[in-house]
Length: 483
Image (cartoon, rainbow, N blue to C red; front, side, top):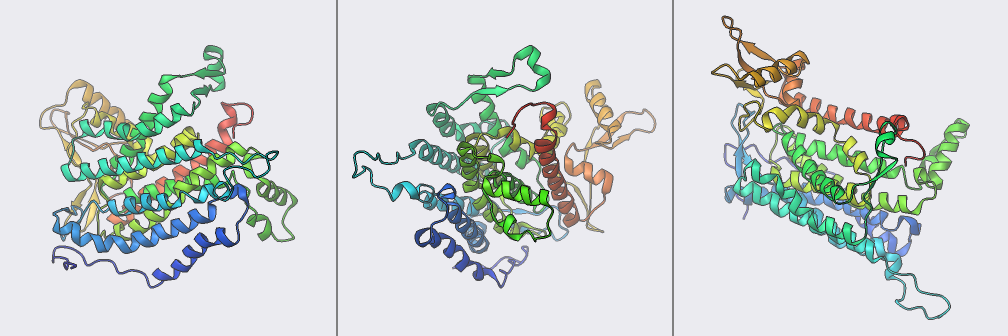
């Protein structure tokens, strides 16, 4: 029985009228490979499109259905940036993450359809049977196990409110299955050095165990960096959605895509037509089977993530009806780490995290205790105007010399705003060291919805910069074919 929302909570956001119109499209994508299989090179691509739509529809429908049960279980929190003081269900990231994992379990046969339709032994001894790619299956299953572990540990964090000192190892624990399979498959640990470092380190350096440490730290960063840049309706889910779309677009560049060539008009420039023809032949992979398999594997995880995040964002956007909780941050961060590690483009993945890297570096003085860090660094709400101002960290006593030095340096870079005692000149307060506070210092005060759009705009600009660096400026530090 669904419990009606209490008066302190906003009414559930109604589902769009076109909600069920997408269901036949999803089912057609799942059935098409059976009756009209496409290019074997892109085996499973139609299926992942279908499951992405199902992830969107399931999350869109399931979140408001489950929200009432979470409310009854006491999993609710106050929206601190609203004058109304709304109390809404939280930890609803469990719905898209659970649905995502279930759909990926159902998706398992699709990438291996070519092999499942073949007999285990060839009837003709002179024609050997196609060997089943056990290494791909083990990578896929290890990714699912890591995602399942991250979701479980993230939900435990929501329930027990684990402290930061204990949160950090959680993604490392969740990445253990992934790292074990990577080791069992003799995954490479060699790194190509940038040109300026080659006179000192050589062209290729084998990191050995340090590479596994790097991969475990990558999973830690991907999960916690999304969790740190939070507090405003829609930005946790929104940044995950933009990163997933960016990774998916990067994957498509390596696959043989024919529709741009078909859509080009006859009057299109020859150079543009040649580019479309090259893309249709295989894109940036340029005939490399290994490359397009890696990026096809990445799409298997990214497209359903786009659908799940889009469905959750519908209910989490301003004014939010639900909170995603740490569950969604752990789950989505682990999904990015899985694709970056197993598809072998972890450096490109980090480029899509430029706003998160900036936010982490800016937050480091507070995270590591050099500057006092309050429990919540949310913007400050003006109840009279509903405008958000940057929150402040007060200093009842003059800060230590090293703290004052850090704050003055950041103030010189326009990354924080300081308040001084008019008599002694000592720092009495400083805006918190977050990207959200920096935006409010320069563009505030702002309404919450406008601030959310501004943060996500930074995420989009970060992705544009990532593509520019990856495919425009990489030649400056790397030679040869840097696909």
